Length: 82
Image 1: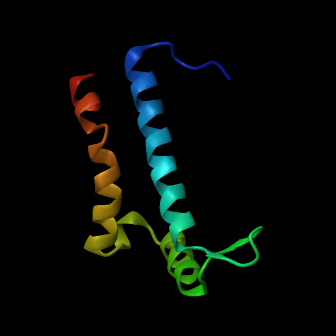
Image 2 (image 1 turned 120 degrees about the horizontal axis):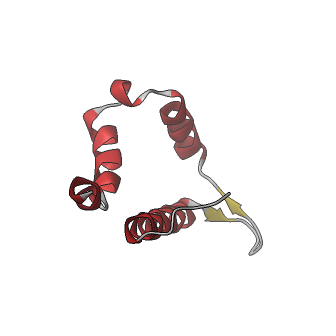
């Protein structure tokens, strides 16, 4: 795949990496370390996330939508300028 070579694209890619890293820190903080080698996701969280995965954005609660909106705010200022 060939990616655009411009400043906006690279800024957005950097933001996506930050978003992913934040998600991973969040996930690791919610997992239970079983034996020093394995992490287990708490069942109630997995069930909640599975439900959210299957739900269209328009059908999410305002709190759930705000989580997505917060991510967009990281780079919306770049898109408005373009």
